[in-house]
Image 1 (cartoon, rainbow, N blue to C red):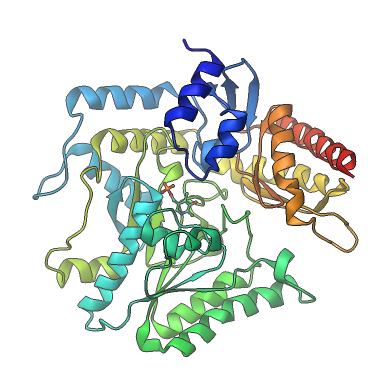
Image 2: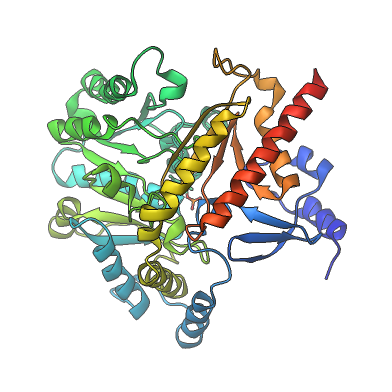
Length: 454
Ligand SMILES: *Cc1c(COP(=O)(O)O)cnc(C)c1O
């Protein structure tokens, strides 16, 4: 096996990483992860690291599950590849589509398979516009999303997202995608209560619909809880008001469940938690616990009915839509989630415990707010707890804290000065205790580093 520095060298010479400043990375050298088991990672230097992010919000059942390996192996032996084009199917895709109809809310009985969350959201854009076209309302093309949303990285998905730095590269958004404010009470709430703020933030949707004209608006898209934006948990009043507005104007509601789905919130879907009745649900990540790439769009009876009955051919699909090996692995993943009652355990025991322990971090001088929902949580790092004054961006406090976490043996991610976690759903109480201990140690290291700078 190659040494760490050999791997770093060839990586720097040939590998362009996602969301990375190449020059900066090549100066430092990549961290090399070589192995994982349960909730731990090991790097090439033998350091053991607690994975507070479940990979990238996806490894819900943890690492090293042999059943998933066997499912992939057996499927590769019997049928490693076939497609779903030309009026053909295969057992893994047919079976997974049925299982997905069972675990999603009742009015979802169809899935369109993709290979990622980004492709799922590209599919959403095409499907929404096709739906309205078939309904004789071809002018309804505008999709309303939110600032600081994350829906993926392809042209359409990045356009749906509300990340300004992403839009600035490559002339995005594509036409007819607009953004309203996000329901981020800590940042934008001002003097209002969370409940008042939730209503106001949702009513920005109605204002936008009126401004654009009802006859132009096709859909609204939102993550039940914004993940990559910084685990932004909307006030309880937000989703009911969004639902009311979508229902009032008859526009399609899209719940991007790529992170929230498959147990992340202590329910099967974020829509179950907030009682959202969505028309489309993009899924990915936890669908296969990240063991293989697979995503999809859950299509409600309302939309599927039109596509099927009035449709003709929908000119859309991927070579690997419903890849048999990925479907077999996803099916096994869902079987394990059900059989081991992983979601029930999160809901009843571990998420309440995480919430209690996470809240303790608010006692730390750097932490302005510690919030969590299910198995997602965030810390807002602030300069002054009384005034909630933020650090200047140039201090890069989030990055300092992220590096401190790594050095302490914990993966916690930074989004600006917001630290976020999304642990594997199999974290038990002792893992949560370990997480809190390591997080505190990392916060202390961050404080020390900041003092040294001043
Ligand atoms: C990660 C993510 C996506 C994109 O999924 P990829 O598989 O990376 O393409 C879309 N939506 C949300 C909410 C996500 O978190």
